[in-house]
Length: 443
Image 1 (cartoon, rainbow, N blue to C red):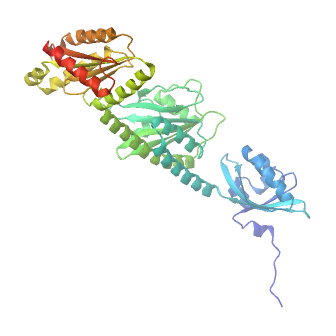
Image 2 (image 1 turned 45 degrees about the vertical axis):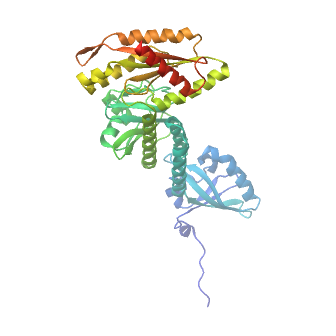
Image 3 (image 1 turned 180 degrees about the vertical axis):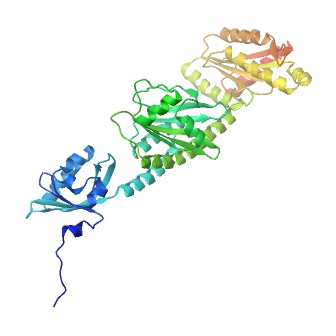
């Protein structure tokens, strides 16, 4: 006597981890196994009679219809993927195996929940993309734009902001801010009275639904007008120094509801982003240190040389003119010797401020030595214009300075070099202006 055989029953099917469906030719569900409740959130009884396409993410419907045509033509699908909206509103990724049964006139499908796998793949892809963005981005703004795109592949991020925190000034700045209602954000504001304040204080993420957001905003006396977020999610950007800022996503009424999973996902991504931001900021600082004088924050000799080279090329191309003013401060050494280097440094900073007020935004004021400065005047029309600026500078610097309780008077010596009269190369013009300055000093 052979082994006893069993006929598969619905109760057996209900033991499967994957969900089993039978749908008619019009995609209405006629059978759903027990696993559908775990995967879709609906009981089998709630599923019966529903049209599969009504539950599907709208963007996936056309591709699914093409797949249905294949199945009904006798070509079974083994690994077709699409997305559905669960009863609780969350999106679930499904991989289907499906075939058409001509006898029953039904499509039989087995649905496997691959949401976690897709999430892991998306996270991996996002991390690679963030690493690439870190090296490819020319500046932080370009980096934030790219990160916004990457985060958008992981969750709904139509409204996305990066807030950076300066612990010395207790200020938040918003170098990147995309919001469908708040078109612009203040470039800088006090962290107090913002939703970011608690995240920066605790170093913990904050997820607020509409009601909780309203209560918290009222508590903090934050005004958002009529545009109250439906859901607000902020996660800290952490570096080894502490919390350096906050990543923010939010939705308005009619938008998505963020989950704890979205929070974990954004927090995971933010760890990578914080490292990138810190590295980029360090590069910016190092570049600035290489190009700017640390005391006066004026361009240094190297940056002046670069700008002069570019200005000369433009002047040669357009048959224009430019001028260099080389100046130093007579008897500055006496200030250092009698009152100390601290007063001397403060005097140099005040000189830098007055010099900048004497020229246009397009001109360059550089510090090239202890008490030596060079002014690059681009696009001058007549040689006399350089002399007029030199006179303006002479008057501005000859007025007395009050530094640390001391009344100081200095006199600048200024030498002028003109292009094309005094040379057509960077060093040639600098040398001429330098000599003219020494000549003026002797005179």
